[in-house]
Image (cartoon, rainbow, N blue to C red):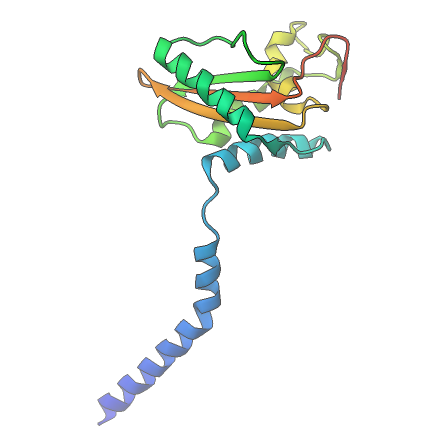
Length: 176
């Protein structure tokens, strides 16, 4: 009899706990993990917000263009900027397949910021060569409003292509 009463009490307490935690469980279910695209966008905007620059918006059109070029690079086994970007800016990244998170990929662009100094483009690098900070300056370019990225895999590597609108790295313009 005592065992039955104890089980009844435990069952009642378990049900009460479940009811108490139902809102948290529902919240956790609704808070799906961020998509790959969302993580790429957030990684871009984290640096822009740190510098008080307007956050970028995701562009499916730019992502589609980036996907086409990433697929082309993967198919060719190449790594070069597209000559046909319709005026969009472009950043490229390559690394071992499945070894890097989206934040690491964009982090490679952001890491160039260590050599960056504000000024009129192309005089923006502590090394004297703007190419050393070109990915970073495109990422933080104040006039850029949209980004779209895509990734393709081939030969054990992943190629990330990000397209930006409007393009940055414009000669003579000030970079913060």
